Image (cartoon, rainbow, N blue to C red):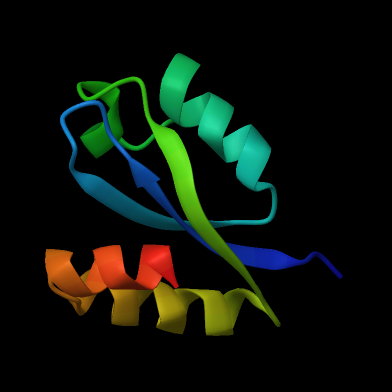
Length: 82
């Protein structure tokens, strides 16, 4: 069974992108160098990982991703700092 992670990357323009993956490092490389990266991040390269959290399974990862995406920028920055 794969480990799942929720992560936040900061784009070159300072915006934040939240996603889920079983391999955060691979996903970071995809965001920066591949067409497999999210459409949102392709025009905002380079991106850098600023936060990640391991979760139990894909369902929990999706729920946590949704929760984070609803947060204001100010609350996301507070989460990153914690």
